[in-house]
Image (tube, rainbow, N blue to C red; front, side, top):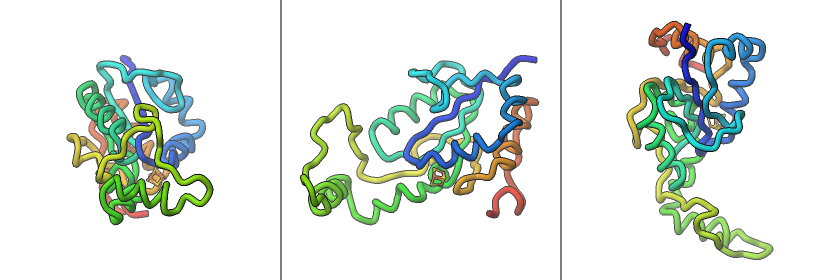
Length: 180
Ligand code: SF4
């Protein structure tokens, strides 16, 4: 059977969704026999590859780097899953939207609340530029599947991935899958 090419991506999130992915425990060994993990924060791959079958996207779109990467991912991926509440709703990263645009947020964080050496980030290109507003993934690109939860439980991650291994579309509905 042809292995599916699986990617996972960490954008503006806390990595808790990836920790939940690792909670799949021994099922990860079964999964490893059925997929090629072609890109992930848990694999040392620098560039997002072409022709990815499925990508789990953790995190919201908060900076220029997130924005460029998610556009590239959309071009190169058949099925994109908004993986966890930060991807689905923007969740915690979007709390800064209440403060106003990026400039206001930076001043508040680095100058007004900087009690040792207040200064703005100095090196453009090293620290990705903040977007004025944090967005959920589907506001930026088309998303094929939504997997809510903060984080989604491991058994729900499995329920989303397992049908894909058979070439079937997972169904994310019902209390068990969307209530937590
Ligand atoms: Fe972390 Fe929750 Fe966001 Fe996942 S959804 S990245 S666990 S804050």
